[in-house]
Image (tube, rainbow, N blue to C red; front, side, top):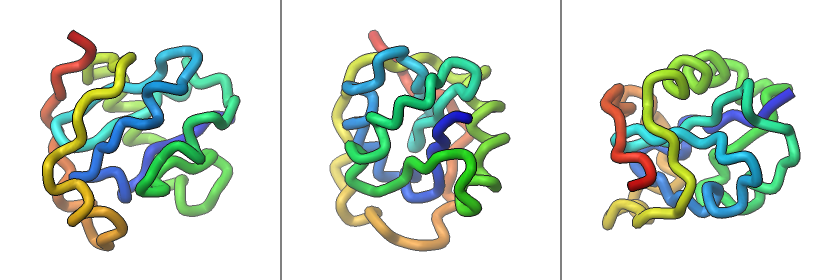
Length: 112
C-alpha cells in the first residue's frame, strides 16, 4: 500500500508533505506533486500535513483514479526533498473542484 496525491493538489502545491516524508518519495510537476508508490513506505505522516487534504491512501476509492498518474509522473518528474514556496494563489485554488483538466504534464524544478 502507498499514499497518492489527488486532484486537490493541482495549482495548490503547498509542499508541507515533502518536509515530513522520511523516504523522499515526492516528485514535482509544474503545478502538482506526486508520490512514487514504489518508494512510499505507507507511514502516513504526509497525509495530515497537506493543507489541501490532497493525499489519500491508495485503498481509498477517491485515490484510485490518481494512483496510476502518481506512478507515471514519479518516473518523469524530478525528486523534491525540501519544501519550496507554494504558488502565490494557492489558497484561492484550495478545495476548488474540477481541477483535473488544469494538471500540467510539465516537470517542476525539483530540489535544487
